[in-house]
Image (cartoon, rainbow, N blue to C red; front, side, top):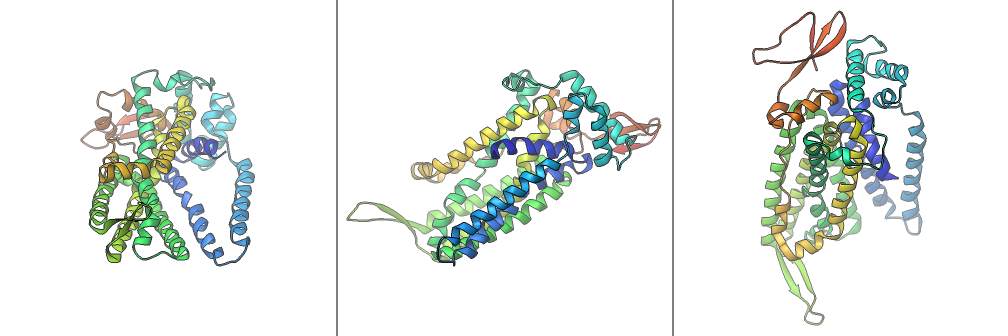
Length: 393
């Protein structure tokens, strides 16, 4: 059930969000993972002091309660205007766009331009109703590039380093002399709270920073933090062999160095949340065309879960065999800018000879007699007014 929700809700949020706030709204949706993760840690921390089965029954009942609230709330969600247009329900699409994008005015220039672009896009590409056929994701150069970026963001969102760090978190706490389970839960909850703050910050400023700089800068900082963690780990750990069982145990030499590792992990979690948490849902949705968005997000979810499976079951083996060399996996991907632009207009970027450079260009909505009539590229000399008012996309 979660896989189905995850593949559809991100697309729905992006398509329903006002174009001026699409980046922030879609990014904030992804960050609300922590709204569940924070109480998911602090509630068990509180109930861990309870003797008996209530220690685990209370968190379980709370999870069921909030799942029920989500189930009921879904019944009141509006349908995507793009889906309505694709299924010949034009009046309903106009009403929804007017309500959420035009302040109740169906004649709003933004509403009219959105309708024009949606109808044009759907009339040219259609709405793919063959759910079993994924060939549309690889049908031409543009689609293959979109699919490549979707797969890349799914993989690197899981493999930027959050999986391995989380995997060794309990061992690092024990090496710092923190072996009490209650305190470990408290620190984990605090880390989730810090990550939530970072994720909200990243979502709110993503349109100002730009997608590509946000990912590149955050991933570069993550590499530096990983280097510090690796140095501390290499200098602070030693292996002890049990003469009786011949089993090997890795322990920390210095509690102070282990605490420094924990501080770096907290900082890593914050940086990862700022750079990657908002992007994991936002970027994939933005690079996919309407007719292949559902299948693309299904592929994104599949790849993300496969990468998560790897984190869970292979990370320990990889660290044992490769050690610090394993971190070569966590390199950042060269992504291009997606800023102040409608979803349908992305085809020009992907068809360009140099998509990264082309994506840095800005455009304007042309308004004539109160109606959006098209989009014009902004030249190097500034804005140019033609036949009426011009507003930024």
